[in-house]
Length: 252
Ligand SMILES: NC(=O)c1ccc[n+]([C@@H]2O[C@H](COP(=O)([O-])OP(=O)(O)OC[C@H]3O[C@@H](n4cnc5c(N)ncnc54)[C@H](OP(=O)(O)O)[C@@H]3O)[C@@H](O)[C@H]2O)c1
Image (tube, rainbow, N blue to C red; front, side, top):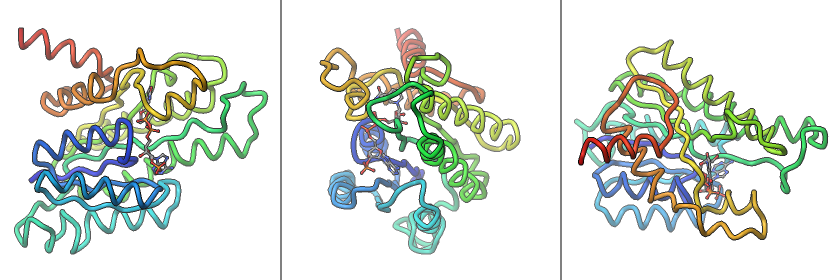
């Protein structure tokens, strides 16, 4: 079975993507900070009959990242020799999805009102953590010609007032991911803009607003990512809505 690591997989896009992968037979390692919600998620994902391991923690914590890497590559992890696939199980990581993310301090604020510590905290979660995790897992990705998907945002290319820290972090994440793709030809590397989604993160950015017109993650973003994984185009930055439109055109 192919194996994926999805960070921030207990709600929103990460949860919906993990569900879609589990349904399609993937073994999973999933993470999030809230251990109880993670345990519930792991239990639900296991109902699909495949190996699912949860590792609770904050991606910005180096000790947590080491634990995640240990589960993915270690003897008891799904890609290790004693994993659920047995001694001849997969010897690498097929998919790494950097999904866990922070908006930074709320309400969102102009850069002039953002402290240096706040900016550093956003970069720690959205940029430094994915880079560090990718580096730890690069041998496992290279072993199977795996794929890195960094969940980006239109805020990484547009310049929305009060979105500066988050937007800069997504621009940096895109850049690191696509540079990695240029440096490591044996893997695929994508920055994926999921589009607006009806999630807790989006509601937090728009407090008190009715966000009911935004699609759920499973409506556009997840099908877009599945289309990306199925077609494995050249490394680059893609929008889920575009990938979905292309898939629909090919199918019709
Ligand atoms: N929603 C949108 O409209 C939108 C638009 C463009 C891009 N995006 C991007 O899409 C991705 C998913 O967003 P979402 O809207 O699905 O978010 P969400 O509903 O808030 O879910 C975030 C998930 O990540 C986990 N998480 C958050 N911070 C974490 C941390 N520091 N370490 C580990 N796990 C963490 C959360 O669980 P815990 O709280 O338990 O840790 C949760 O499982 C993000 O990268 C976001 O930037 C979202």
